[in-house]
Image 1 (tube, rainbow, N blue to C red):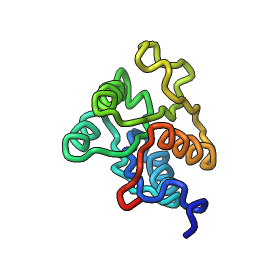
Image 2: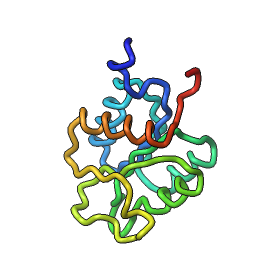
Image 3: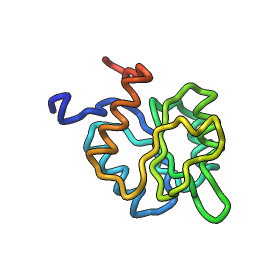
Length: 133
């Protein structure tokens, strides 16, 4: 597969999404773009447990993971680890926390092409290099 056909080849990406169908679709799209998907995780607790075991190259986070539950604890941990991430969410209000305001934000439904392109740009800007490159 040529690099343009697999723009996320070798990158390990954490996915945090509580909707089973959307999570499955994200996993499929990212896998087809060459990424190794960590998850998807339906809640912050399982995502944080995964982060305790391994360091991803990047992440895709839904903001709302159920009534009154957010992915902000995961975003905080990713910040501490220096891992680039973006939000892909149906939440029409941008995060109010100043630390999160500058993060890339894609409103659902997100086209596959836009998601992959946004992640590739995010990883390039963070100078993340997948193993073996």
